Image 1 (cartoon, one colour):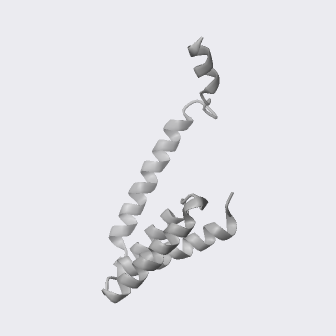
Image 2 (spheres, one colour):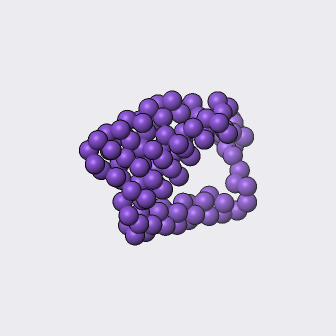
Length: 105
């Protein structure tokens, strides 16, 4: 009987091969961001990567990532590290957008 319960709990794929397609898309996006980050100036690359990754944060953790973004921005500008500074600005901005448009759930 335990097998019957496990069979009911397992989620079915939306269509055959959906998880493989999702994995391929994820790998493609990772390679795209790697190529973009390597070809752009460091401040722009830091902003782009942090902004897009910040949009994926669970709304429950927005306050913590917002504090981390502000801290990174301040320390980056003080230390004259443009990639860290603009990455922190982007992370804070993305958290404001997540809080505004996604909300607490």
